[in-house]
Amino acid sequence: MSGAPALQLDGAAVRLGRRTIWSGLSMSIRDGEFVALLGANGSGKSTLLKAVLGALPLAQGRISVLGGPPGAAGAAIGYLPQRRSFSAGTRLRGVDVVRLGLDGDRWGLPLPGLWGGALARRDAARARVAETIELVGASDYAQRPIGELSGGEQQRLLIAQALVRRPRLLLLDEPLDSLDLPNQASVAALVDDVCRTAGVATLLVAHDVNPLLSYLDRVVYLAAGHAVEGPVAEVITTQTLSGLYGVPVEVLHASDGRLVVVGQPEAPAHHHDRHEHDHMHVHG
Image (tube, rainbow, N blue to C red; front, side):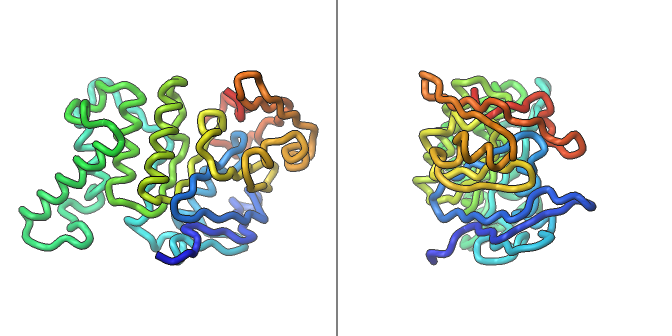
């Protein structure tokens, strides 16, 4: 495996209509690095993931995804979209949800590097699914209907779905959303473990950096159409965020280690993520 970044953006910009969502974005993530993408509602975090996936073209700049153009990496990218909700009556088992990540786009898709007939491929697929469920610690409940599981259990299985093809790049859009604090902590630890042990380059979108603080290599913070990138201690500071927003923003350090951002402006009303209730998060 080469030393080239798994993901690299240089001077990138995205526009929707006449509005520039963000510009001048330069960042990179290498194999085994864990990076959080932060910012208020409307800052363009999910838009960045769309650009990485090839669903939205750059207006300027350059992007390389696993050494090629966006959209060309296919199964080498594991993607978990914003939180899905499963009704209590959903009968699909957890193991079936994970299996959809393996061949949901085309039933019976042969696994790369595996030969033999349909039976051999089926056995290999079953083993791969079971191995990935074990990796995320969900073996005890994977046979149950996913609608009966807790939010944290569901999220572990959805992460397994994103991991089952053994991707080199993992994109997670708000995986901690709607989870209580213990589950946020356990899911953050799980993602870090997968990132380090499997060498997967990981970009995680979050409103709140606190559950991730002890795990991150770097953060990318989007605000006011621009971005800063670097270690948490350098980016989440009064000086850096005030400069990024163009207005006074104060970063406080709570006694329990949490970061609290005070004075962060609200996002523009005409472009937002779905979590409209929350404008103050880089704090718990």
